[in-house]
Length: 304
Image 1 (tube, rainbow, N blue to C red):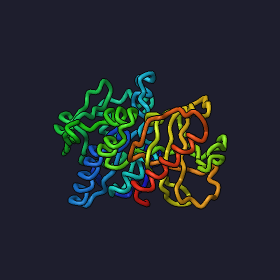
Image 2 (image 1 turned 30 degrees about the vertical axis):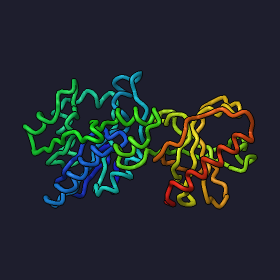
Image 3 (image 1 turned 90 degrees about the horizontal axis):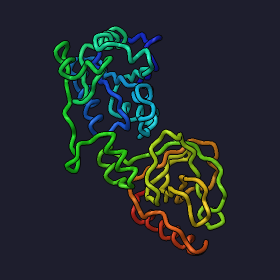
Image 4 (image 1 turned 135 degrees about the vertical axis):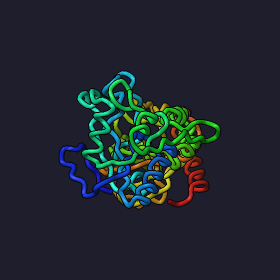
């Protein structure tokens, strides 16, 4: 998949395209349906399916104080688009100038720069200054598929519902709405080395403060690293048993060969909750509980 940031240098090789347009925070199962329909329609027309999205959540520009935490990084989203068969993705800057475009100007921009002749959008997507454009507006002007909400467990799937589930530790529900486990991406940094002392050396994750973090507790999952994928017991929280002063995300990687990961990128996947964060009377009690957590991961999480 080809990725274009902005349209300044965009010179598409195609003459027409099916544009799938949206904010796509987290690329949940509803978003996946949009992209799949665009890819299918593109195949019928022998035209590429092009995802058009934004470099930030619109509220960062329109109402910064109300900006929600991001479910995923732009790199994570792009990887999902590529896996679904999109030919290209155009990432538009959602800046002050962009907010002044009318609905007509926005669609004209896509027609000129992306060569879009048909569209696939979600039922709740609006665009243009004052949100004047929506599915009905667009369908009255050009061929448009407006995709209705996707329901999971009787709940309408949305980025808001996923944020709520993850922030409450209900990562199993988030997995069903995303179509894959929630994953947190960042870089490995040094810690207190306490895990090594206890016999369970951990990797400590440094991440953007704008990303969504699961509820404090211990999770069964896995880690994607530069050395491969490994099952992981993941801890999120203040670490009261060792006098923690700030919230951390760390993971013990089962079967990891031991090479240093400091400074490298890592992605932690959270398919299952084990328990809430707890205090312990001493380090031996903490060590015993960690051993139980690791045994749970070994028994319940397949080798990735």
